[in-house]
Image 1 (tube, rainbow, N blue to C red):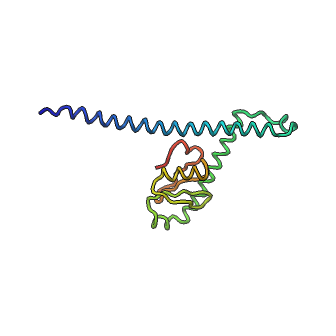
Image 2 (image 1 turned 60 degrees about the vertical axis):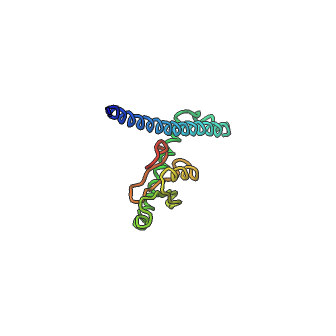
Length: 160
């Protein structure tokens, strides 16, 4: 019996799995990008509404809401996310040995220097963190590893 077809079938199966995984990952990234774009539109709208509610003497001297304003808002959020990570990292270092002895390999959701919850899966931890605190307002820490920064820019990726 001729089994030479197996030599062709196995690589094709591997390629199929890789393509499927890549498409699934791309779909997740596209979903995150859609969330980011929606978020940025909402920020622009909020800024326009705030600008419209300001008294005339303030609005005459202030620049109109532009992309520059959005960039400044983005920069502010990035700094806030970096600060959140730094605070959480310091807090984790204080309890690191205790956590490593009790929860090795688990994922901690941290917010404002406190451990909020402990998970087995980073996807669950990320979902709960976003739902509870919003993007850029928490960080994940894998017990036994360096912190995963899921600040403002981290929303494009999920931690492992």
